[in-house]
Image (cartoon, rainbow, N blue to C red; front, side, top):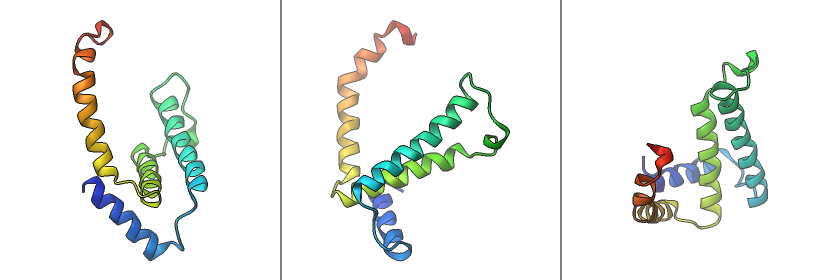
Length: 108
C-alpha cells in the first residue's frame, strides 16, 4: 500500500468507525503519546534501561503503526498529500545528503 492509499484507508476507517476526526490539537497530543510509547520500547529493549515485565509483550510494530495512523489523520484533516510531500522530501534528501553521509567518518 502506498501512502496515498493509506491516507484513503484511514479516511474510510474514520467514516465507517469513527464519529469524525479528532481536532488537530487532540491528534497532535495523541501523536505525542504514541511516539512516547515507541520511545519507551526502544529505550528499554534496545537502550540501557531494563525492560519491565509489563513491557516485554509490547509490539514495536503495532506502536509504530499507531504513530503512522495519527500522522495520516493529521495529513488528511489538514489537506496534505503525504505521498507527494514524502516523495519530494526523499528526492531532496537523496541529492542534499548523498555526499554528506558518504563523507562522514563517524559512519565508517
